[in-house]
Length: 318
Image 1 (cartoon, helix red, strand yellow):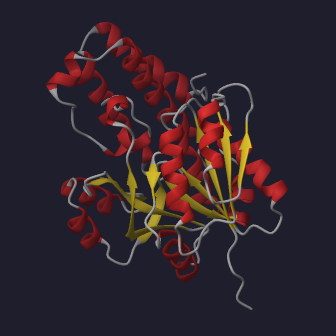
Image 2 (cartoon, helix red, strand yellow):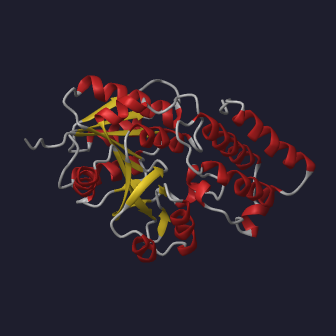
Image 3 (cartoon, helix red, strand yellow):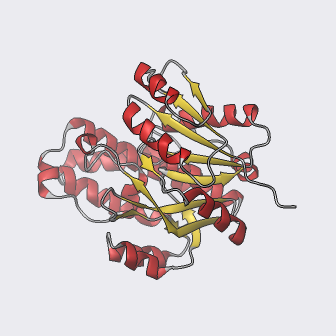
């Protein structure tokens, strides 16, 4: 018997009502729209509540009264979705700054069924259609080939036109079936961004086969004014080049701390993930990028050692 999928979208947001409304509109225009959207407002923020009222989709707003972070907000939203919608079949994690094309969800569901996958992620492109990120393959050679093509979407798709087994992905768009979510457990609430999405997707891929679908390219379009070379989540893991000189010169204390958190979360995930795959191979490159960004000084070298040591000992930044 063919069962029509019931997808509940989960969103963690904070002070980005305009982006959230854009996302909700793209979800409402899906050929296979979500049954509902559960939104955790990490503000809280009254414009967020007003934006939700404009959505044609059934929405549930959760206001914990404090910032739970990306993982904590999604964990709360997932718990609510499982309780409120006992017949749901899939949970969609999606960033408030993502935009989906009308057939994206239907294509992802179809690909999941075809490849018997418990979770699936698309390619990510920027607002100009340039390749921004691909889900990390289980194959190290394919991962290196993807890095070599840079932002060329067509070239990346040609490397694996029918898709490939996925090791992990970053957070803008990830679809998991109910049983895989329950086996893996929800996103961690004790990891402060910058790598918590990779940790969660690794648990999903350990619980059930995970798949990457190149035919779907979801737009990840955060506001330009708030984007910084160092305001990065785990998309930094797949980059192995130094940021431009202007960025290095303009780095501030907040960027320094965020980059350090990324290093610590990366090391933490290497030792705590049930199946880290080739994630440890990214440790040297990210250490080098940190030092290229902030300088090869004794203090910065000690900071890299400190962050990696804490992570490898099992302490996420908190």
